[in-house]
Image (cartoon, rainbow, N blue to C red):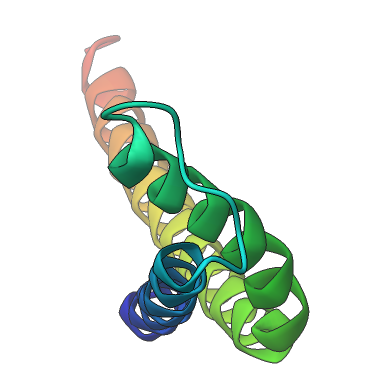
Length: 102
């Protein structure tokens, strides 16, 4: 997930540099008053989102598979722990139940 996040930030930074250059060269319009920095940030965010959606599809799928595998392992460990507790509980009840009638 860290790799995906860093790649996504890289795409955003690239778009930020390109949009900043385009705004200050006059290709894109400037923001009103003091809102130029916010305009550049929002425009670069809007441009980087679909680019990262398409370009990082394989990395996103790989990260998703790793997360699903990790969750499945955690569920299996929880089930194993739960069954161990049930076996220990059943054994203690069986030994305690046999001694009670005497």
